[in-house]
Structures are given as C-alpha cells and as structure tokens.
Length: 208
Image (cartoon, rainbow, N blue to C red; front, side):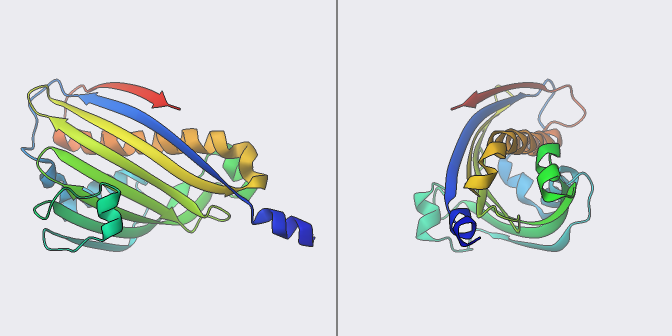
C-alpha cells in the first residue's frame, strides 16, 4: 500500500502541439482581435464551449492597465504595455471522454477554468489552465492566434502541457487527442463570431 502511494506521486509530463487554420468566405465582422475580449463575447464563447452548461463564479478583469508578471512575459503572453490583457475564471461541468469516464466512474465532472489573454489588433495569446481534475496536477494550453485580414484567415498554433501519475499513462494519448479536439472547437467558436453565417474552411495539422 505504501509502495503504491509513493509510486502514485511519480508524475509523467506530456506535451503536444498542433496548428489550425480557419478561412472565412465572407467579409469579417470585426476590425480587431481586441473586439473579442468584451465580456459578452468571452461569455458567449465559454458558454458554447461548455455545451451550454451553466457557468458559475464568472469573473473577468480586463484593460490595458492590468499588471502582468515577469513569468507571463517570459512565456510570451504579452507583447507590450499597450496590449489588452484579460484575466478570466469560471467553473462549469464538462463531459469527459469515454475512456477517461470509465476510469473516474462518471461521465460529467466539474472543473475550474482560468484563462489569461493578451492581444493587440492582429495577434492574441491565450493561456488556459484547467484545475480540479483528480490526479491531473497540470493541464494547460497555450495558443497564439494570428488574424490575417487581407486573406480573411486565422492561424492558430497551440501547445498542451499535462502531468499525470504513472498509473494513468495508458490513457494519456486519448486525453491529449480529446483536449486538442476541444481546443480546436473553442477556436472555431470564436471564429464564428468573427465570421458569422458563412461557410468556413478549416485545415488542421498535429505536431509531435
């Protein structure tokens, strides 16, 4: 019993990266990515991303004067003091992937989302931290979104960082695929606000 407890403390770090390109076939409805940081737009994307589950403890701080840490600067979160910064947090219930649900014994689980956004007119960085998942000590994604107005396209490059105990290593690949799919869905939801009512073209690729 003691041996299992000690082994459960051994964490396996895992990473994954991918690229997503979204193309709009009609005129864009926003002039700047900063327009996507309004409370209403943030809420609409989060609500749709949660499959219309209730969003609890909704909290948003935004503005150019919000300080950001040296760590955020090192991570490339913010470009300069004129960037618009947003700190967002809320709790919601998610539907776990089938293979994960089999292990946890429940298909639905309540989690907390903490998001940091830094953006100017054409480039946005977004860090999403998911907490309160049993055994998962780290689950975060970092995305860089680049808006190309002449081409009416959005390029998204994302990376995932995740730490799991060794006894969950067998489901790591399924978890990474599910998280990538969820992140791509979130970016598509935001793109629908930028390019509403149009038939969007999407290209995806994964990186090792």
